[in-house]
Amino acid sequence: MGPFESARLVYRAVEPAEDEEFFLQIQRDPLSFQNSNARIAAPQSREDAKRYMNHVASKVLLGVVICLPAADQDSKHVPIGAMHLDAIEPHLAHHRNTDIGIDILREYQGKGYGSEAINWVLQWAFQIAGLHRVGICAFGLKAEVVRRYGFKDNFGMMFNLVCSSMNGEQVMEQNLSG
Image (tube, rainbow, N blue to C red; front, side):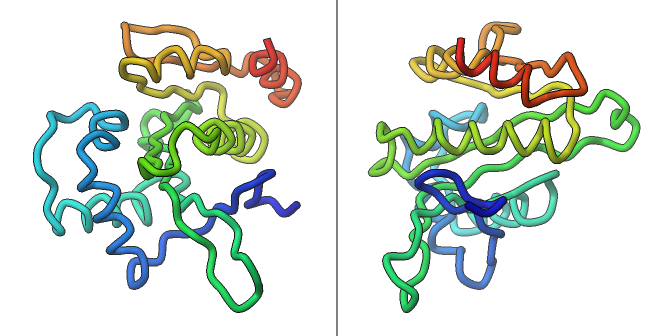
């Protein structure tokens, strides 16, 4: 397995020329939008989707399109979601923290893909980027899901997972398994 793969998923860069319709699909699903976004629910335009796509592509610490692997060498990966780690402001870089943003298309929700992607991005954040804290906003039923990963409640809807050791893998495995 490569560094941008997990058991069932592939993580690739955003390709604006190819991904505009995909990001529009994500933004226009009101249920998915409300489950992944703290903003007030409002109809999303093509321009809103482009802004979000460009944000994930170039204004974050890590931005990926979550895909199912291609069925064969002649086909492409199937995009099912997008995920990012927020950029760290230069004057706050010494805190070494970030927040996760994740969107999974409705037809792929409830199949464990979101959990698998979060597990992958947590490993990337702690082991590759050397971060000490990763947060995630969770709404409604999603709050219980993120607690399973060891995230701790902070202000009602924000959850934090803290790496308290230079050996992030050991701390993270302990938090994720128990």
